[in-house]
Picture 1 (cartoon, helix red, strand yellow):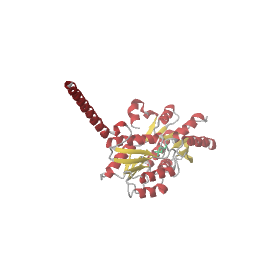
Picture 2 (spheres, rainbow, N blue to C red):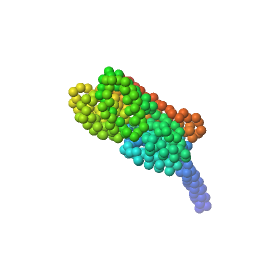
Picture 3 (cartoon, rainbow, N blue to C red):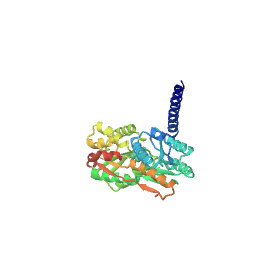
Picture 4 (spheres, rainbow, N blue to C red):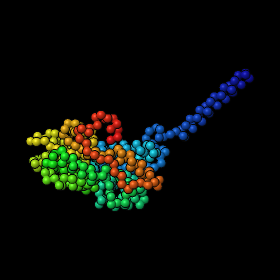
Amino acid sequence: MKRLSLLAYVVGGLFFLVSFAFSVFYGYKVLTHDLSAEGGTVEKYNYHFVLVTEELDNAYWRLVEKGAQAAAKEYGVFLEYSGPKQADIDEHLKTIEMAFASKVDGILTQGLSDEQFTPLINRVVEKLPVITVDTDAANSNRMAYIGTDNYYSGYLAGKALIADTKGQANVAIITGNFYANHQLLRVEGFKDAVKAETGIKIITVEKSGISRVRAAEKAYKILKDYPEVNAFYGTSALDGIGIAQVVDKVIKSGPVYIIGFDTLPETLEYIRKGTINATVVQEPYEMGYRAVKMMIDLIEGKKVPPVVHTDTRIMRSEDLPENNQDEWEAHR
Ligand code: BGC
């Protein structure tokens, strides 16, 4: 009997020890588990930035985001991607206000228009660093700009059109918006490039409001109202695609030349088909990536150049990335 109760004590004691060890072990794990490893919740980050874009689900802006997120991951930044669902200047401004109120460490945004963006940026920058991306509000106190030299890219487009049409074209321009700094510069650069060419005439300049459907509607109307138009220049990522959709379907007596902007998959498809003749290449991934790095450098007191221009060039069918698709797409 005595032996039996001793055994019971030993077994009971062992049971207690084992369960105690288990509860200590798992209790410790629950307290120290890494939330970020479970996906989504960023528990440990050095900075919190917001990237405010013109249009959230625009494929061009998704590439800017992709680059920014890559840098964010590398440097321990919590990066929020925010903006209007569809291009809308008031909502864009409101989103910046909200980011400002939520006390993030830095704001990355376009400097879309001088009238609305400059006073807001100037107010924000008194408390928080602001970097403009893709579109500069050069007259504001933003701390730096990274993106295409928009005037130069328009100038390149003009020179490409002259070369490709042998200096003979009646051109219609479809641009994103008349208030947007980068769109204005892309039109201005183009006009300057063609101004000495007597055979190039600019027939009309219309806006698409950053909408492929509206770009297509405008292209259709232009072809009807101005039968002499035989060339288009689309100055934002969806304009060339909208124009090409129409030109592809409308029967014209002669060929219509199209030069667009950016290298979204549909644009490349239209270049393969021969509907779009050329496009202006931008580097959205790189803009996003470097913007995050520049913001960190600013906060950490390092020297950052006030203007950083990413690469821009003309792409025609012979420059298509067929030979190195994977590498090319990963970066654009
Ligand atoms: C511009 C962006 C714009 C986008 C619209 C791009 O060419 O750089 O600012 O939001 O087109 O589709």
